[in-house]
Length: 465
Image (cartoon, rainbow, N blue to C red):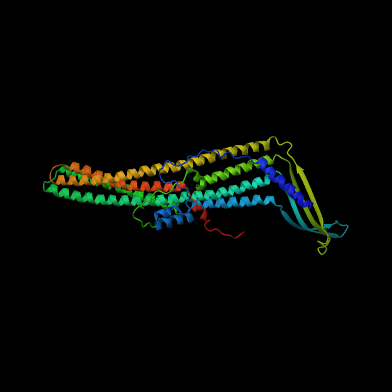
């Protein structure tokens, strides 16, 4: 009964000590806008499924899953999570006594005067177990647990970024191939036009200047192809690296994905739960506050216990017949440490202030990323639509210029101007569509979600070593 009462008192001291030593966190004062600037629906929803499924493309889904399993950078983040988990378990073990089993044999012989003797011993010992009166051990363990939790959020953040990077690189590769294909088509069309002008020149229906101008157009288009091939190869290598491979993946898609309508954005406050980087900043802030509590508790007196139960006999047959127990308690309190503990407390308090500022910066950055992505998405959609109108007008202008040139109403310079404009807009349209998809991907990434919580470490084993 007395033992139970003692543990009850110690438990009350422990929890009251933690309440007094752990600082309050001034993070509820961060102002958040009520809505985003976009006029889209603002339902408070959290994406539970993978964001890239809205594109409904099996090849993209396959590539992202492969990257999540084989990307070396993500594997490093997983390894850091395992390290943090192990550290938390190791520090948590300090809350329970550590018991060591001991056994030994001592042989004693008086030199030149007597026979030898043997002394057998065996038992168990508890070495320097600290009674956590002020919550120091609990604070250290709590901080370590939060470090492990932050490592998990780091994995989720890396996975979210990786999925967006793979999707961007995949779309970029498709766009570069489309640009290369249209350049080759334009080159072939320009060469065909050159042959027709040469035929007209031989029949005196065209001038030498028109012939030279068309040749210049052909060579200008041909000069763009090596650059397009270089861009395609660079995009292919970037995607290959993200997949954790050395050989390029077989990409069969030849067209960019069709964009679905904008998703429900929710309100800015939902980012606190949707974004793993924001959640990571929050738990790092909590960990910093626990370390302040541990530093404060380290300046207070500490009680440490050590004990031993053992048996000692002259023969192994009689060992464990009689037992001897020892219990030692020590009270230690800092007296003079040249200000080391005070300095450590000040250091942890400064780390806490840094963590508060980092959390505020992360929240602001998260909201800013959504707003930036929305701005790019909306303006790019307007630009792409205007470019489509411009392309139609350029096609009509080129057709009219050809008709008038054949009727002798205009010279070939006007035709070349309209041709170059048309071909340039055709290439611009592909880039504009690719950019719009990229902005949508960045918007989906910035909104976060919960699908990363289903991730498991690649090759994870449950075996204990």
